[in-house]
Image 1 (tube, helix red, strand yellow):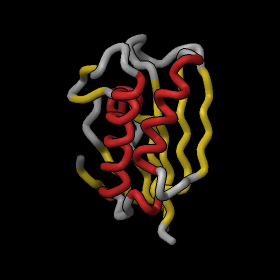
Image 2 (cartoon, one colour):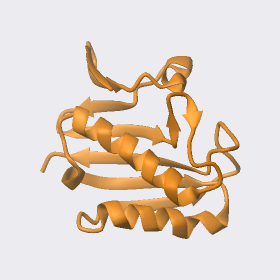
Image 3 (cartoon, rainbow, N blue to C red):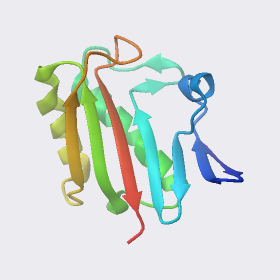
Amino acid sequence: MSVEMENIGRRVFSGGIWEERYGYARAVVAGDRVIVSGCTATVDGEVRHIGDAYRQSLTAIDIALEAVLMGGLTCEDVVMVRYYVVEQRHFDHVGRAIGEVFGKVRPACTGVRVAGLVDPRMLVEIEIEAVRT
């Protein structure tokens, strides 16, 4: 990932295809906050771990945490995790991944079931917010 400065604040870009295509940043650094856009298990333009919501979650979290680090904060600064699943049966798999990564941090968390994501092979999308405390 690379960090770029713009007039309206710092932006973190991963070079992912959706960021360029849809005109958004992976994360925005706003004062003491790092707000990370939704992350999926897409690496180098390819969806990873097809059919495995748990492993897709871990990959998405890794991508999101890399953006948090590029924004100058750490895993311990994460205060909110939001996740979106396409199937009810994936809630526990995603929750397990979130618990493994953030179990000691204990951020606020919201899980939502959605009709679908941008690519039907994607089972989960995860957003993270971190605040310097």
